[in-house]
Amino acid sequence: TCLVLMLNMLERYDLKALGRFSPETLHRMAEVMRRAYLERARHLGDPDFEPIPEHLTSKDYAAKLVESISPDRATPSESLAPDLLRDSEGSDTTHFSVIDASGLAVANTYTLEHSYGSRVMVKNAGFLLNNEMGDFNWFPGKTDRQGRIGTKPNLIQPGKRMLSSQCPTIVRKDGKTVLITGSPGGRTIINTVLCILVNVIDFDMPLREAVDAPRMHHQWFPDRIDLEKEGVPESVVPALERFGHRVRYHRQGDAHSIAVDVKSGQFIGIADRRIMGSAGAP
Image 1 (cartoon, one colour):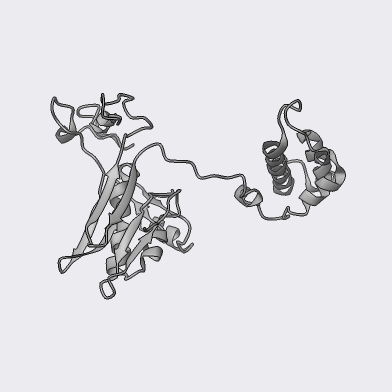
Image 2 (cartoon, helix red, strand yellow):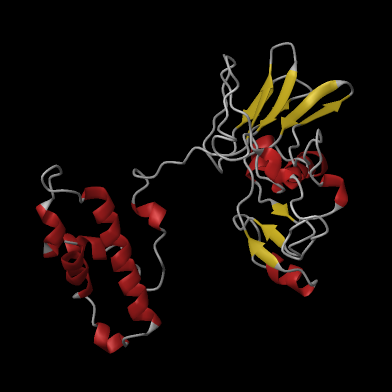
């Protein structure tokens, strides 16, 4: 079914004239493959259980799909079927921010480290123990350029707590809470919180704008800047590279946050759009 669908789409192009390994031919083949595999995901299964639409092998349907292919621009796969996509629930650290009517604030970053943690349930208590032993420095003396740290302060020792990057944060001004934030993300957590504080405190961004703004991360080693691409001017990366930085684009954090308007006392809850989450009030 997929092969017929792809051939029906490709016959609308003169691939021979374009050249077998020209960018134009490869682009069209990729776009045809993209659409055929979407139809596969949407419709195909065991025909004894799932009805297979006859239109998938029709030339008219292939022609309709081809209409959405740009000759010189890749189509984001997500744009073709937003109805099929669901944000996955995180398997690691989570953060939530809470404030009550009286102004009592909580920034809670909580982790099992990975999925079900150590998979050990506390008897009669109903919660799992984490497996955060992985946050110790595993190899004494081995600190390398890939980011492995082996320095003495965080080596494993009986009764010792491992180093964590958790950074639940409450910002107060004149004795009153003005911002509650935090994030999951391993070593990126601290820098995610830093970015939000810089946005709000130094640049007076509204909280929605501060949470949405692109984030950056540098952790000593690997010696590079991780930078979120969306919202960063194209000129920024070449400029950073001229300074001698190595730059990688990388998504970062999930900072569900609350701001308090110091004049009105209004609470402003902002869910991070990077992952599933929501703001709510009774």
